[in-house]
Image (cartoon, rainbow, N blue to C red; front, side, top):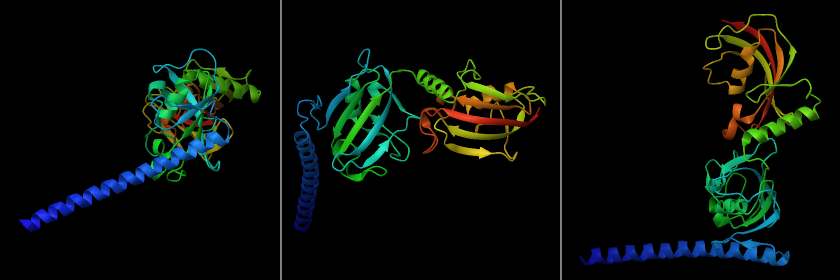
Amino acid sequence: MKNFTKLSLLTVLLAALMFASCKKEYDSSQTIDDGKIASYIQKNNLSSVMVQDPEKTGFYYQVLTAGTGDTFKNTDSVLYNINIKSLEDGTGYLQTPVTGNLANYVGYSNSFYWPDLSKTKYDIPAIRAAISALKPGGTARILLPSYLAFGKNGAGNVPSNTVLDVTVTTYPFKKQALLDDDRITKFLAAKGLTSSAIKDQSGIYYIVNTLGTGTAFADKETSSAVINYTGRILNGTVFQSLSDGSFSTGFATASQLIDGWKVIIPKFPAGTKLRMIIPSRLAYAQRGLDAIIVPNSDLDFDIQIVSVTN
């Protein structure tokens, strides 16, 4: 009984020691982060512009550009891009490209995810707080301690316990369809294609370069086709190209096809060559596909309908 009592007491003491050690380590990390941010604010004369978060959890933010209209409400949709770098040495970890964007309801915009940086969603309330201080088209800067960001484990190329300097830029549009159309029309104008592009009611723009005279799609529910294609994002980067007639597919239920293909291609017979600029919601939408086709990317395809089988 005495041995049992001594063992139990030893277990309790060890547990208490481990808890105290963990708490000390956490407190130490938090203290270090807070000190770095306080020092940075003082050194760069930011005391008058940096706002401490309402809950006083440790982050600070500054409205760089207010934007126009009304400030965002929790129920509003917000489309935004983000830049993440080290507060200490300026090392860049993420700049979401202008070919895509993040999108949330403001009340949920503290959940952060981006391919190649995080494989899961991180709860970062600082993003929500900063966006809530903005109007559409506004920009905010956040000084973010590691314990409110990616913590001791880091994320992607962000090292552990890294204090971050984050910039959030919102778009003036509250609907992805409007942002997509703005991107596409500017792209067409820059390429001198505005007059030749036809806008489908779906929001897809297409240009028929050669109207084929071969077999037409009798029923896209059952028809299949051989397609040659080259796919790009709007900055011209090619993500895939097949020109040897090796890609054959059905249309109505083909899981490998994006919706934009299913809408436009069956309108034309074999032999047709066309170009399609597809808004993100009819491509890979918010999920994206990889490091090139990031979330909410609009896509540009050259299409050749080699043959149609009904």
